[in-house]
Image (cartoon, rainbow, N blue to C red; front, side, top):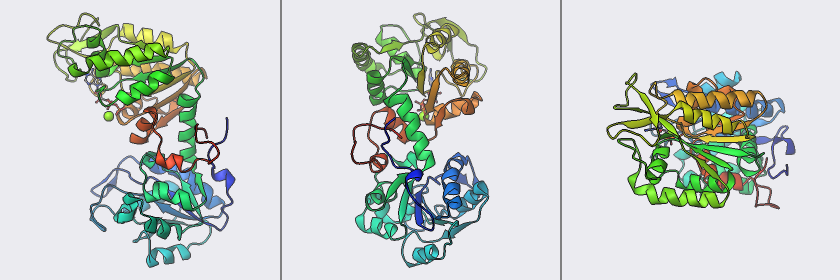
Length: 407
Ligand code: ADP
Ligand code: MG
């Protein structure tokens, strides 16, 4: 694979001041941290830099503060959480740039770690303002971007810095880029995408882009209901988008031209209400009763998906097959998840999953660690699937080839 991004392997960091853009934007409420996955993903880059005797300066946004110093938006408690994850001392500076920040950086010894205050406390961050970028750049010799999840934003700490300091991808960024390259840009074929979830109107660009790249697209969730309705089937009270039928037909026709086959559910699980333990029944996808809603794909659909999946080498998954939060409507999503996990574990399939609810569904099925890659990047992952360029990634690209992605 052609190398298009510089990584930690390409820079000498010993005794250098290294500005690491991480994503410390974790859930935090009432003095308690929620899911610290993002800190765990950042840890390998920081530890490697520490081991290589760099002076590590971590930059991140935290929430959406309206003004500098707004209560509840300081990164101080998150620096403490990072300390726990790293099991290393982490210093904190109450300023992001300026004299205090300069002094804190000057006090760093090789192998030490410092977190600077929330980048979004400074107006220049979101404006990607040249003066602020310069102030940040004065604090470091090398820039490491390890925040793929913030790469869809062209902010000072996610994009601007890469233009004025030597810039490389951190290890987590590198993993994201390599997973997406293998799943989307140059996949081993046949390659399948699963597109599920609730609304096609929020995933039109995603469907269009995937139609041009995939061999098969499996539709599930409420999205599938819209495609069933577009075929003229009655969908009863199922969640669907009645104003999207023509669009759904257009997408399908365009996909067919690209030799991309859509796989729709052949049977669905219906109920009168979407409640845990509600009386559910499996019906043919053409026979959804007028007073019921389709809340999951049925066993015949799962069997058809599984059979096709076994012929594939690559899968990219966004969107659950049904209302996975409410049993028994979690069965389809879980069955598909388990099949993907076992094919991956057997070395037959490269699997990449992402999206807020998809990550929850994959974890609820207990197979998060059995896929090739699970992206926690949310919005940035979806923008990749839509085929958009991410400013934070583009700025890291080695200039000679802007046409393709690889890590
Ligand atoms: P992601 O966050 O991974 O991108 P989405 O937000 O598009 O995924 O979709 C997830 C949501 O879709 C879940 O809340 C799930 O309950 C809902 N959903 C899936 N299938 C159905 C269905 N048949 N009817 C109603 N909602 C559904
Ligand atoms: Mg969602």
